[in-house]
Image 1: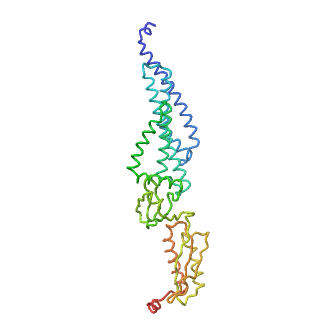
Image 2: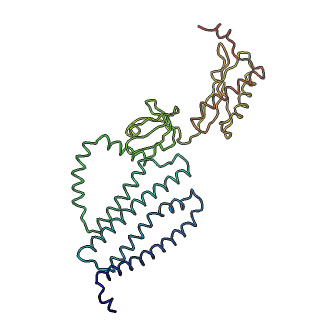
Image 3: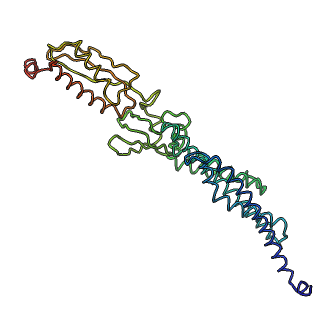
Length: 342
């Protein structure tokens, strides 16, 4: 009892604060463990949305437990002066900002996960990721302003005056930014689409950023195109309404060839070529037909993607050539070509 009377009051307050902090932290950690254990039931698949949520919350939840324990301690222990008010405000700011960052990152990862499951045509672009981050961070900032009872009118006024100056200085950048939003909303193109611009550039869209769109060519190079060029120019999207497309393969035979036999052989061999869609029967058009040097016709098949067009055409030509030679279907002779050469 004598020792208790001689104990300074500050030591008693520190011990009481430490005890409250420890109990609050232990309780928060227990709640965290139960929640993570519940989430683990939905995270059996490493690629599932539950696993993404579990991985995103594992470390930040530890910090949130510490912040919650600190807030409880501050409510129960009276600190001198303005220390309690500043400590409480700091805890709220950290909690809101950290939750905003975690939620924005989590939403982006979930969007990428869903896009990967449904195919590259809806893959998440750079501008959509930026918009998710900006929206949630602005939402967190609005919550903090409401918490501290701050008026946003002066902020909006300052942003209006400063924004006018920035808009005049960054006209091209802002035009490309809003063009990127236009692409995201209207979706004339998506990541994974094969497109061709009126200027001749073509390739697969690899990313739609806030200022530029990146297109991967068949040669493996990347073309960086300003978003304004996409929205204001004429382009062909070979993925709309479907990535499947019909292609023509020009075939020739000698003037003495049996047209019916040659056409039947071409259609039969086309069905055996890898890359030809089985749901579309090959079609032969006798076009342009008989020429002075040979017989020419077109074989029409369907492929799954424009990038397969050249490979499928080459395979069909080789297959039909071998078939013609094997069955004795005559090919155009060099003598006939020389005879009719102008």
